[in-house]
Image (tube, rainbow, N blue to C red; front, side, top):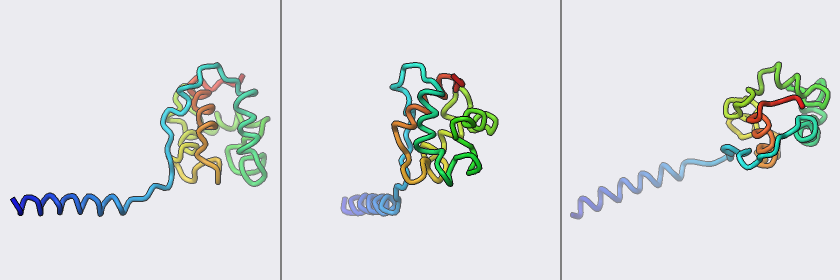
Length: 131
């Protein structure tokens, strides 16, 4: 009986040791847009997000890092660059960056942002239309 208890304590101790070595650095949000049911407009709902959080000097503005998320170039840049797979947010590179599946998480210094992620996810799920 005593050997059995010692064995169980050893297994529990190893498990706790393994868990204590793990650290969490990024939160990944799964299905963030599942609660958005209204049809989203790229011009009215998505572009303002990019203008406020992404298309900033030194980031994803014209002449900056790709994709160019400035209001006049965002849609073409996302689609031609392969960052978005219409109807498939789970396999869209844009969502990988926003959720932290790719590093660094975006928006840089402020991500992941559940509100941003919900809108982008829902827009892609709805077909990633340029409307």
